[in-house]
Image (cartoon, rainbow, N blue to C red; front, side):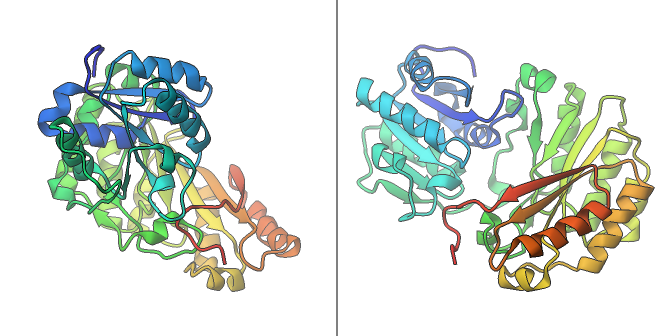
Length: 358
């Protein structure tokens, strides 16, 4: 992923901060096959000016620039693509990511780009690049991608650089998708949760660990869905405990059986962080958004985590869900405060493309 002024393909995005890494770009790079030697990854942050980003990208004289577009960077990507098309209209712009995957519900940048890949793009992006670089431009600009079976994917972990490992969060995933169908969540578009082969995943984690990786952020939507796998992963890290190990997981709050509790209790302070999406305790709202949550178990487990473990608890609430009022929200907020998580994040309901607005 070094510097090459004749690079044909540049994979890029704007991260919220430098400490974040673009996991999706590394997946695309890992699955480029014979095109990998002609491609590089260039990451930027929201703090950088679009004109500077465009200049850096064009220094490589690429034929194709692929952008990852997300809710947090769509405005800046739009400005950057607009500049690129003004200065270098012959450069082919390909967009992918959640913010452009739900046509006709689209941001303005879609009309500026040459191609848009909707859905998981590991195979579709490679195929598109092969066609474009051989002079065969597809007529269809909007490409609906078919998701590959997980065992056909090349994993991206070898493409974290030494600098990434030393200074940034290392994103990993033991599974993809979410089985729950909560409205207003993009994960509800998933059909189910699919695990990666566990032994292979742990081999990859071991290689990262041996290279010095210590800050792991699991992006699994429901890390504790399959408890046996959760226990195996936690045991893997417990056996490799260091003073600087950090593990971040997103967990469903009402599924902590005794076997999982036993392993969680073994971790010392400052290692585990659990992001727990409570969202609301209001049963009527839960029904309206198709959210299945056992409130009694949720409260019991949050209390147990806070009192009996060293895990750092980050709990989420959302205001603005259907039929929500200040009074309803205050009840959920007070209930969560009484459970004493270390941190409560209040989210205002966002407009997510591809989701219901009703």
